[in-house]
Image (cartoon, rainbow, N blue to C red; front, side, top):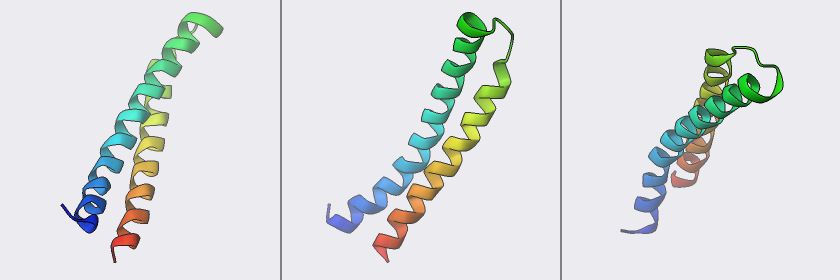
Length: 70
């Protein structure tokens, strides 16, 4: 694979990685708030918030890499 091929491959990894990282951080945040800090049920809110943050950051990084390709 050449340099541009690898850079194109990282675009997909950026999107998938951002989504997975957002889901993991959101789930951990909810569990942390439920069990340790407030002892209240916050389950879907932290997960959804960080899920959308992960989507935004993944696409933002993918756009940066696509600009390098062009």
